[in-house]
Image 1 (tube, rainbow, N blue to C red):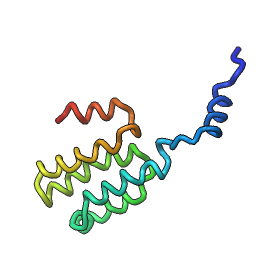
Image 2: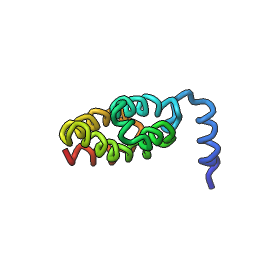
Image 3: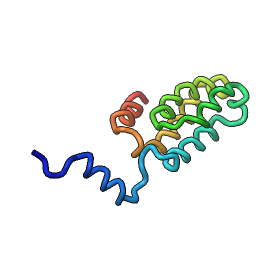
Image 4: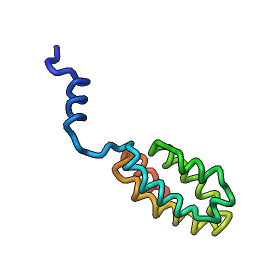
Length: 110
């Protein structure tokens, strides 16, 4: 029998901790703004639905997987090589927000 329940320990440390949660809006906002800046005005005109998704996605995983749609939009504007380079430049923003396995899989393909 455990003396300290895991749920109780986690809730106490959450109350006492001042650490920024991974999925908090404050942690996601720099990633969101960088993705919107990379999309640009031309990309937003070409695919306004993607711009709206980027504005309102509230999960780091959803932002991570929206990168493929960004590559498709940016490829039609600037070519595939530049689009992939642009998205790869954003990958460092996800460091610490995603599991390391997702970050490693991104590096292995390139």
